[in-house]
Image 1 (cartoon, one colour):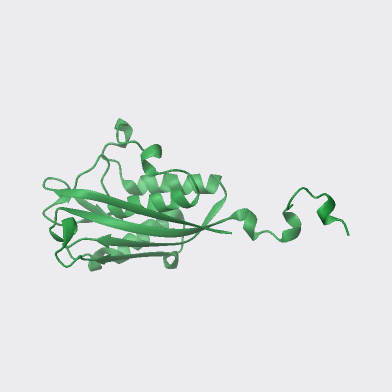
Image 2 (cartoon, rainbow, N blue to C red):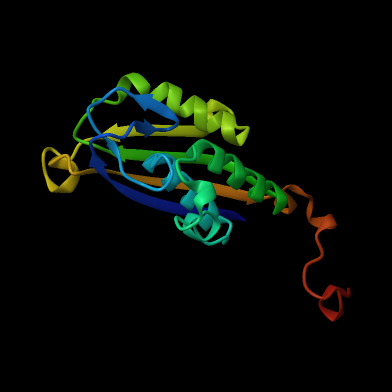
Length: 178
């Protein structure tokens, strides 16, 4: 059985903060406001992964009221989510994420973002896709008030890789008699 999760995150753009996306510090005049480094794409990916595994959301795991997460790298939080999935015996099939930002242009940084996410989760780079788009000047991202990101993922439980003879279905009682 494949489990699918989706995630969404948004942060306000502000002066005096670094712009971090996909674990990459992008030179720009504004950054994202948040308790951690406010990496919207990594936050969306984490929520997608946690959702697919029915492990709630990043707010439950990393509350913004907890001082230990103040300014923390979201890549470190992503590594923790990867460990949670391993403990629950989930395998990540793939991740697909979209960053919505009017500016700056993100194409030069996408490959490094993919590499950072893949490395944090012990995946091959072809299991991770990140892309960016604008909203043609519309909405809060178009007016450069903020940046948002969407992510989807697919997980498989390790047990699903085992042959049917190793998985007991039902009670093993009367329905299995010949």
